Image (tube, rainbow, N blue to C red; front, side, top):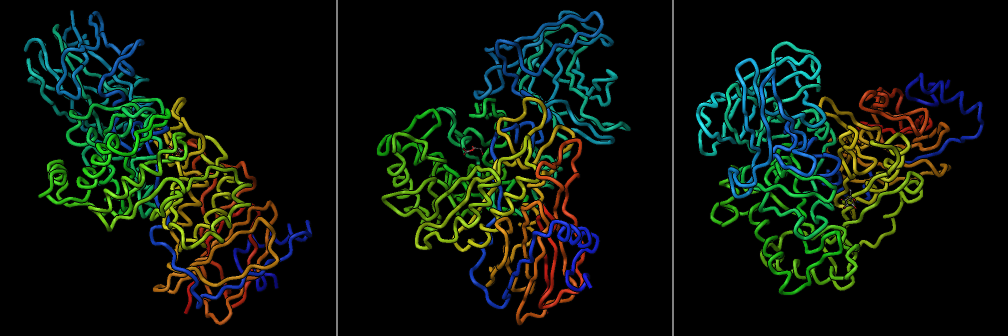
Length: 636
Ligand code: AHR
């Protein structure tokens, strides 16, 4: 009897039904859906990605470089993450040499003076990586460095990966021919049988006395799509599963920098690594700029995303701004050059530069954002700055959609970027935020949003807040052209996090998705092209839904979020529709809002897929307490 009334997953149904009887407080809600009555088009670019150099998202994260401080920067405490190696009775010293380097961008280097060493007792330096170096068995790691020596008698250099626990080299290579002039050398380190671990470091050493200078020491594991200078495979796989339609780049605060001279200067992030000077990020560490403008664009290419390019617009976080007018002109020109680098042909100055950098094909670009969060600019200069960029960009690229970072009084931007960092209760209260927003105003980009509960990654309570909010995004995606959770990534090692509540956590060895990550995956994986007419009755304040249809596939995607601790029975009516009897249910649920995943318990909460039998034009489900579900109903 119950099976007929409440189709669904029987085990869960039985549990939930008894809970209802016991508490006696939840009456069935009724949801009526009209799949034959499309209401509004769903933006095909609704879900995308946003992150920046924060929480070691690129360096020590997505960007697969294994060497930390590869440009050998020193400070009062030494040369970070680099240490001297003196085997046996070998003797050496190291220091930053401010007078020699391989390029104008990297004019300094690490000088290693070896007073005494022999083949068995070598001297040199070691690098500890990003909280270790993850090594796997039978894997090739490709490395390089720039080097010069004071004399050929220094002999070949040994490069090894050494296990921290055993002190034994697990892969070794030699580099010969280091001479008096700076030159780049490549090497490969191949592991054999070993237990995968991150407790490893890189050693560069010599068996003779002499002086060696090093710069830009680099080591990469196999990368996503085998790109040189590429991205971590596990993280790219996780991002791909989010079905992102766009990437907002190069970031929020990271675009602006604390000071104008610490902004993301795209021209200093292109070309060979040796020509990139690196720069300080506002999140308090140096960015290697290995993830430069072209790498961002290639990341888009790899995941079939379109770039949403944010250009620096003359405001930096320490209340530094550039006045609109002649002062701003060089910044406007810089943005125009950037657009040409991204979209121009080989016959344009900056398009040719991109071709030289290895990417002949121009990138498709639709959206350009002018600045970031300019409501924090207390000078009030944004209206003028936006207008100046708008005029110059539209004159050359009338087809581009230009995004403002705050509401404007004097003109209507094409798109307005809204940001929300809130608690779950706020998202429950505000899930209908855009329902009544004027459709004659600018289109909306929710460029940063998150329910901030849980650290370093969100818990189930946050996932429920997010899912409730996303039902509102989908319902209003005639207005909301794009939306992206932020921040996306966090290195969970001590000191790795600058911003609490980030979607995906990792260390050198492994990564995991938070419950909120899985909510994103579920929502983006099942998104139709239109919303359908619907009505919810008798529901409590913590039940949220969205219904979209893929008209070509004749599939209805119903998202149901029960943010209450109590189970929620629901009667679903599809008047006039002929659903196939078997539907697919994907559910994420937890016993408590604080339940979460972690680096050591990555799969505590994952979506579970199950069939739903006996679906008809009127059927019932029980939504467990604290649950997010997608129901895919195939229509005949
Ligand atoms: O996502 C973290 C930060 O939040 C972004 O850099 C900034 O735009 C916002 O304030």
